[in-house]
Image (cartoon, rainbow, N blue to C red):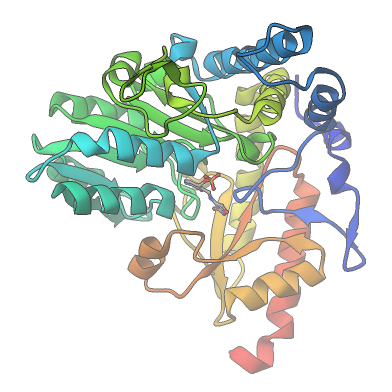
Length: 409
Ligand code: 7TS
């Protein structure tokens, strides 16, 4: 199936005016919009099947359990995990990364090293700072070269002491994609594991956790047309079997005695309490939707948008873009600064034109500090954006530039 403007009809939210202008939604790195198919799945579940899972024998409980576990199977296929035992349903990327840090991370000791990159989201920094504080392990960084990960430096920093390499597949600021497969092979050869933050890659490109040889891989449902509050942590079965759960209570136990308890099997061992059933089912609907479009088609279409818009942005005098210069190396996340105008003012001015972009540090303060800037504006695209949206962005940026001309130049 090719991506055409018609798919926009599936997204009711896109058809509105903001500040008397048609909405151009370019904040997809923060969260994506939901197609009717996903909204319908939520409504259908609550209107027909709502019950708690894994406990009741009545018909509704069986239906809810079946739908919840069917969603897990869809996720398994989507990322090519070898078994649903390896697919843990979480609240989102942040929860998944915290689980890995709290569980696997607690096995580290003084002298062990955790390597992360300077382009990480806070969710893949702060949990490792905590692990380092608690265990005495050392946190090390890989920095940048030409707006991309400095691979040469990565291969120096990763050593036999590296127990964990925790790294994003695609940056939410720089629009660069890291060579996860190569990094995984390298860290494995040194005896460590790789934890991948897939929040910005999974919605846009084919992820195959077995091909990448990722030990852990986390992503969020809401960045790929699914609801908020649901996400995925993939972990290799051999590792998940060996480590302890992070949360304890209902659902995850096998047997509870007065002073001792045992855990149930994977994946439920990690899923304490009533899970987010409705949103898991709707995540399954989002995956069906993306698979119908074809994730490769989505990737190719977004690349066409980048090839179209990035050179136009680069041609605007006084507009600085972060990350790789070559459109073929840039994802559809474009962070920029315009003249000396504060990015919040840029975002507000664009909003007046109906164009929604984010401004700020994008939860990547160490990166922003490293770049030596206070913040950036950021336009981020998804498959329902069009070349007309790109044109509107350019037009609105030029209008903003003109508006602030006298005050800031
Ligand atoms: N990792 C990356 C690379 C991200 O971009 C984000 C969210 C997260 C982790 C956390 O995901 P969550 O679903 O658990 O919150 N990034 C952004 C963003 O760039 N703007 O808003 C959220």
